[in-house]
Structure formats: C-alpha cells, structure tokens
Image 1 (cartoon, rainbow, N blue to C red):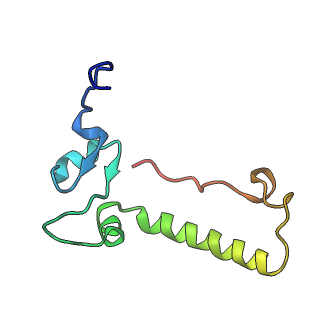
Image 2 (image 1 turned 180 degrees about the vertical axis):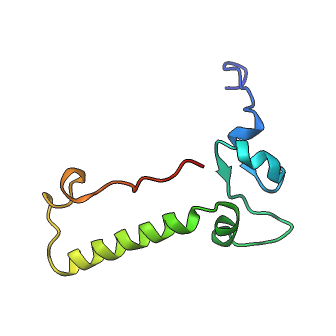
Length: 98
C-alpha cells in the first residue's frame, strides 16, 4: 500500500507521548498518547492522572454515569425511550478551555 498511497508523518504535536516528547511541548499537543513508558513500567491509569490534569474530572463523570445507569437498570427504569440521548443524557458539562 505504501507504494500506492504516499504516507506522511504528522508533526509531533499531533501525538504527544511522555516517552519521547518533552514537557514543554505538551502545551501544544493535540492528542496525548498514554503509551507505556518502558523505563517506569507505570500503569496507564496512574500515568493518565499524572499527565492529564482533567483526567480525574472525566473519570468521576463516567463513574457517576455508570452508577446512575446501574441504579436505573436495577429499578427497571431503563427502556428504549428513556435511554435515548435526547431524553436521558444531559451531555458533557461545560469545561474551561485549557
């Protein structure tokens, strides 16, 4: 395929990784790869909390959604109409720009 379609590398800011990028370049990162650092063997979720400041907020929001879903499921409140995005999901909370 590489002989038929030219493949280009993206600039570093499109895939920032702690293993090969410096901390100063993280400010310009468009995506953050929570890659395994072979030097530290740190678990990915621990790295995420350390590297991405808003990770704990996202994680808490997901846990609340899971708890709510489980509670409604146990109470028999889930049906097709109530679980549609329009009627049940409030959407992401507004976040400050980084």
